[in-house]
Length: 548
Image 1 (cartoon, rainbow, N blue to C red):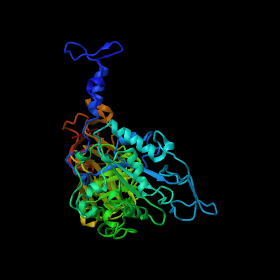
Image 2 (image 1 turned 120 degrees about the vertical axis):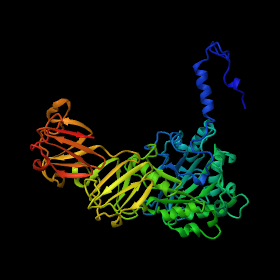
Image 3 (image 1 turned 45 degrees about the horizontal axis):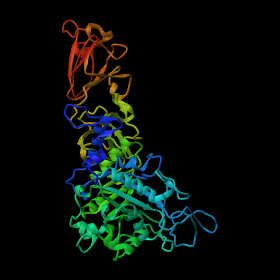
């Protein structure tokens, strides 16, 4: 290893550098020192945690230019990435009809195959198409990018690379399991890879080692790689993994992650595996609609690892909420196209079905705020919920949700429920609701209820008749008289009011709020009432309002 002085010479282009305390030190030298120190920085994940106890975001199709300009840019955001690999540029039948994902052993025309070479692209047909520095070099070029990045960030968090193999093995074309292993170790040294044999140790099987908790701490994996085989052919999706495990066994560089659909795959033999290969399965791959909490919990309880893909929402904010849901499922890798996520979630997920978080029925992401069916009661419209049937909800950590079948959010003759996250909960008549959720308020768990009221121009205006105005905390008067803020509505006719819990409102037909010859009324929430001048002593108009 070079010494520090050889890296930073004492002179350069006539500029002197010195450690003397009374002399200036070049900013370039300071920057260089900071860069060196950064390469030894600890990873972001807590170093005391074991690999199988960390639940993190992963990148889906990391190699595509539409998701990242360069592959190494992805690793700067998440060290869990995916690369799709193909053996050929083109596969066709004798009728020239393109057939995707078919096993290479079928009698098809195949073009572009090379010994120990795999193409990196997304489309089934074509050449290389990826964001690696040397796209034409296929998988090898992408591995070289990652190896270079790793060398420049020596103590990085372990990089888990999922290789999604889209075709079967080229046994007669030097593209067998051993050839893939050799390609990997030609670029990344074996001592920088945590392999199945490293996990197995002296245990009788890989599964037994995982069940006994032999996964290392994240700190022990710093600067290393873990390779995982996913994907498969159209009709035999797990056959590729079975053949790899059968062929490589204790010499394997990659873990295998077959598609898992049910708990029998976890505790027994996965589809297309046999008794000679099932003990090599400790990674599980599944599409989001297959990811139910009973299944993912069973995997985690065995000490195995789960990757889920296909759960993307429309935005990175949606994906952040989905990530927190998957973390509550104990899913280790949640793969998204949009993987650069906000630090915290600011929304809940509402479902049209009981247990909707298990992947069935429609779902809606509801941001922080107050909503009601069709926008009644002065609140925003409950959108994009197409009706007021909400049967289940997921509330992330740090958020709280109020739900009721009464647009005013007031408890009383109708039901109301408050849920603090993290929580997955079905909403049924057992909570006192009338079978529908008409209003939802999403807020931070420690936030106070909003200080605001809704006023109406008609008696019983909360039923939807006439205009309505929302008045927040403060003092107001008609046309801003009496030194108060101007009322936010165009006249002083108020016939009804809706006051939430924890809010008090004073109303008078005199701008000064003074009692005397004109009427004054005080209403403490929760309350919904008409303003009747015969009962309240008002002259028929409300000139001033104070909300506190």
